[in-house]
Image (cartoon, rainbow, N blue to C red; front, side):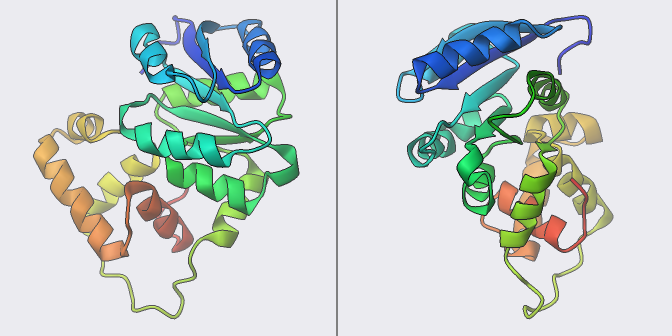
Length: 217
């Protein structure tokens, strides 16, 4: 996690060079933010991230988010927290849900105020999840309706702890350190949570748990 005394190191990714430069400029003007790199979504941005070591990636999906979301999903395990800016014309269920499933830990519309974007990036760097209120409603609206499914097997108290930390975007290593247990034990608990919730991934587990009222984002 970043110290409050340090500038937040950001990399800006966007296909449109004008949008990329503009977003980088407005974020650089925000207190406590430092732009350490810029890249196009179809470039080798993974190498840029490895070199610059940013705290957060701010990804402007532009007007056609499908391709970038595929790349985000492929690289999700090796990335720092990703804040996705969604197109205003489609900032609803489809793009929001796809971005969330792809591994984004923050979702905001592209027209969000720069101060809001900066604040969201700082929150992600502290291990939190940030969702625009309307996008959060869209995510819940498209989440699978499990009211007719079999009851979810009850989680143990430790599994509840791990689930809440998953919702905060923490890695297995960070969870292990927080709970003073081994990473192997964390992986065991995560697998148990996925099985009990019938989830296919960590993000799917968080969405299902939120839908069921087990956690609050």
